[in-house]
Every structure is written in C-alpha cells, then in structure tokens.
Image 1: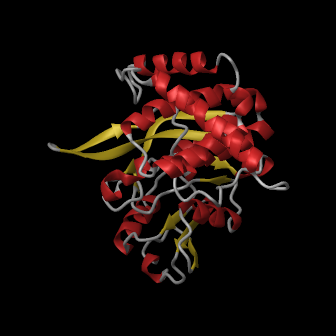
Image 2: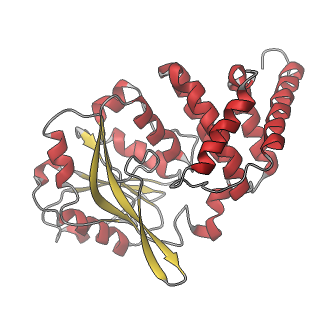
Length: 328
C-alpha cells in the first residue's frame, strides 16, 4: 500500500524497484496498490520493466492526507496482510520481505513488526538510526492482518491529517494479542526535507493540537475496546506531553488548549483522581531516567505548573459545558 502526493516518479520507481528485486518470495502473493492523494491519473506503463510486480492505481482529486489514502487503499484490496510503504522510502535489501512471509507461514499473526533505519542529516553527513525493536509508532516495516483489523474495526481516522499513524498503529499494536517481532531491519526511512515530518524546519513537531486530537481519538476507541488499559495509557500520555511540550512548544497555543480541554473532559474521571498528579510525576521521572528514551536527562522543573494548568483546562471545560445551550 503506497500513498503518494508530491513525490516524483523517480522516487516511486526507486521504491517499486526495491520491491521488484526481492528474493525468496512468491510474487503471486504480492499486490502493489498506489493511491494518489490529490492525483487522478497516473501512467502505469512506466512500471512494465518491473516484471515481478502487478501495480494498480487509484486516485482522487482532493488531497486528504496519508491516512485517508491508506484507508482508501485498504478498501480496494483484499490481501491477507497489508504493508504500508511511503513513496519516498525504500526497502533496505533484497531480503526485506522474506522474514515476513516466513513468519506468516507459521501462524495467522495479527501484527508483525520488523526494524527500520532512519536516514538523518548531521553536520558530518548522513547517519542511519535504527528503530526501536518494539516500535509501535510508525506504520512502516510492519504487516497488519486484514482479518484482525476488520474484527476490531480499526481504520485510519478521517479527521487526522497528521499524527494519523500515532492513532492507527498505536491501536493496532495495543489491541493485538499476537504480535511477532522480527530482529531484521527491512526498510529505510530516507531523508526528504519536503516530507510531512521534516518540511518547514520540522513544523510538524509543534502541531500539539493535532497531537492531542490524535490521542483523544485513541482513548475514545480504547474505552470501547480495552478499557482496562485506558488509565495506564492516559497517565503515560500526560507524562509524555509534559516533555513533548518542553521540546516542541505548540505552534498555536489556543488550538492546543482547545484540543487538550476536550481530551481532559472526556477522561475527567482519570484526571479527577486525587493521585493523578503523583502518577504523572512518577512516570515522568522514569522517562527522564530511561537511558535510551527520547527524554533522557530532562529535568522535571515546571511539572507542578504543567499539572496545575491541566486542572485549569479541565475546570474551563466544565464551565463551558455548563454555559452551553441545552441540547449541545
């Protein structure tokens, strides 16, 4: 499943060639679906040299984001497993897909997670950073069982243009009871300064309103399907948010506060817990001490003010609900 929007034909060809060159796999079991996000026509004859592949195209006029495109692709394919690829990336080697096929030959696993490399630019050149062996964030280097997704009604959320993977992948992994982890690194997230995550000096990281919205939708689904884990995940989110906001101040404070108020209001029973502040502080302390974590060594200075702000946001949400017209 390959959504694309502003990638070049050369980028797509590079990715497809890396799929075409796989060894030790049955290409009769591989169906390649391109989804043009804001693209209504695409010449498939350029892929005739890729003799191992059957490449299909579906597109639509308006650009609606990668999540919408992936969901559109899911609805137009029928394979037992789904693998999402980004059009500006590449499979790491000719042996990238074989470990997945080997894994599914021994069971109907729900999610299969391999490792990938992130190509990152540093002053001294390009470096390649390995993903966490149990990555639950990125949609790449994974196979998702279609039957499992349908049984849990897991879909890419139509209201999320960014952080859509935080929602979908997080849910798919959280709800799964059968995950296989492969030690193989199979995929390269290539450096692309025009990509959603990296463009405009990584403005993506500062869209905390969308970050909060993604988690609000996540908790909404978890309350329905796995309520026993909501408290753990909610307090974990709040601790993570404390550090995330320090590293990436919101681009729009008002928009962020609006979304965070909604999230707190929908989980008011958890934030109203007398021990909520202590729980978040304890988790934040562990995150700061985690040697391989994103927040290692960060101080907890300001966490009391952060927690008090959440109290105020929830109280504001209460007042707004009280003053809202009846029926709203």
